[in-house]
Every structure is written in structure tokens, then in C-alpha cells.
Length: 330
Image (cartoon, rainbow, N blue to C red):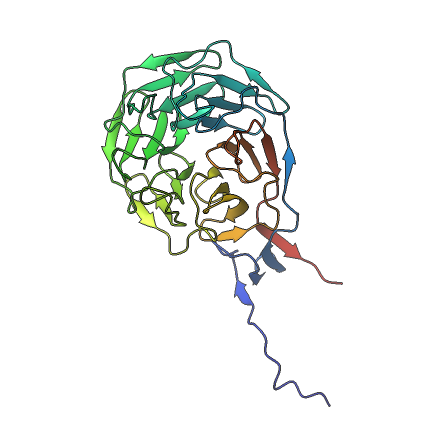
């Protein structure tokens, strides 16, 4: 007779409802549906080439979705600052006839292609900006509301009428956070870790601050913070690859972080489930930093940047979020 005493196993959770925040690889038995379930990604995520920008550049502001994106401002080389605006339709970029009212780089940019918001950054030669502009799909307009703290290489998330701006450089790395209601910027509770060149995802009331640099120059961090509309909370686990000048997409509970700087340009891609980051086996085709990003965890976009030369390349990410799967046997 076989001796089973020495065999080690893992207990399977028995529950009437699916866990609210499972981790990848977790298995449980749902007594309500009488189904054995697991949390896994069964589809291989992948990056593919998209249409090139008309103007190769970095440090611009990206917003929108994979099939309707916006890229404004930036620089095309040291000592430059641009007003250039381009629109993406899922296949190709079109130069918008009118650009920003103020040439700028290192901005915060949020919203959608037909209702964008750009704020802060710097002009050349190095003047920090607090001004805000709105985009209606064809034209940028200056609006009265200005940031309380002018800064550059900051991040943001949200919509044109409900935005969040956080981090950046004033004279050194900043933790300043401001909330926008469509008219006025209001200073709110600061990040726990002052940093710049970080990525953002989510909304005005449920945001994610990802990576960045904590001092000048290039001290990259992997720390992740969550915003609940009032304050930031440090997440116990950060990025698997600490980096700065990276791209972010998605929501507070389902995000994507990609590219950036780790002492060299990076192509690493990581997925966030609301608790922890998982490194994707598929990296970007072109390692880059200071690029524009847009979209969601399952349909993201990366464009422009430095790789190491100024780039016009666009990459499209298509994937399936880690999700609950029913396990069948026969």
C-alpha cells in the first residue's frame, strides 16, 4: 500500500464568495457556485509596433486610450521646448494644426483625446511653469486655474474636470500633491516619498504613484503609493525593477508600468493587481525613458522618448488582465 504520510500539500480555501483581492496562483472552492476557481493569467501579453510619431521627441505629455491618444509638448533635443501636438487613431499619428499656447516639457497630462488637460513643466531656458491648458480635440486654451506650486517632471491622473498632480522638481524632488476640480487647483496631502519622473495611474480619488527618482540625479525607486481622495498610503511591496522616467497606464487596482531608467534604459513591463506587481515575461521591443504613455492594463500605448536617441516609435500593448478562472476537470 502507498504511504501518503510524507506527502506535503496546500490547503484549498473553501468559501461562499470569491476572495475580494486574490493573488496570482491562488486556488479556492466556491460553495455557492460549487466550482473550483483560481486567479491566473492564461493569455500571453505582448507589445507590437504602432505608427510612428511625426516628430521624434521626449518629455511630452501623453493621455487618452490606445486607439485615441494625445501627445503634446516635450523636447526634440537639449535646450528645446515644443508646442507640438499629435493625435493617434489606433494606427497613425496626425499633427494637430494648433499646438500648445506655451512651449513646455516635463509636464503632467491627463484626460482623453477630446478633453485633455496639461499642467506644469518647464519652458526653455528652464523656467518652471504653473500654467494649465485644456484641449477640446482641436485647440488648446489657457485657463485661469494654475498650480499652487510650479514644478517640472511631475505626474498626474484623472480627467480634465477632476485631476490630480503629484511629485516633480521645484529646486529638488517634491512630494507636493494638488487636486483640480475643473477650475481651481487645491493643495492636498503630500506623497510619503518626495520624487520626480514618476508614473501615475487611476483617478482623482483613487490614484497610484509609481517609481520615480528621490534625488538628483537618477536615484531610482520602486515604491508604490495609493491615493484615496484624502491621503497617500505606502504599499508594502513596490516595483520588482526600481526605475524612473517610466510609463504608467490603468487604474489603482489594475495598472501597468513599463520602460524607464535603471542606470540604463529599460524595457521591463509589470502588471499591478491592487496589491503587488508581477513582472511580465514580455518586455517592450524598444527600451526607452521619458516617453508618453496612455491606456489601460489590457490596452496600453507607449510613444516617443529616448532610446537612447530621441525616438518616434510607438508600441501597443495587448493583454488579458489577471482574473478569476474556473478550473475544470475530466
